[in-house]
Image (tube, rainbow, N blue to C red; front, top):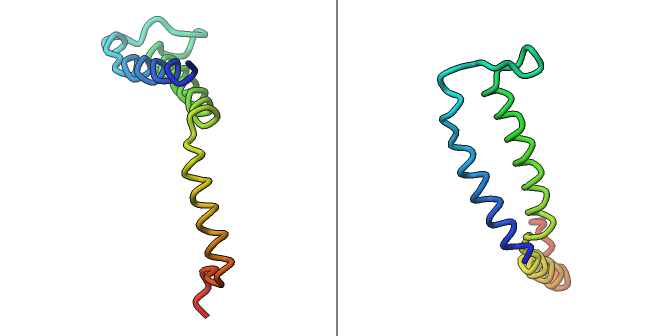
Length: 85
């Protein structure tokens, strides 16, 4: 269930990144000095950071890490720790 929510979030944020609605004007100013397009991209960037944190937390492929750790421990047991001396 959480993976489908993350998939829809990725697709939704991808679609929202294609913003063409703030290209023609810098008005209105947010907080009295920040153009609306710049504010949009700042909030978009924060949203992407939160999404990436959620993706790492819930969709990280741990089976690849487990396989790598298993291979590196078996390599260490055989004396092939990676040093070339």
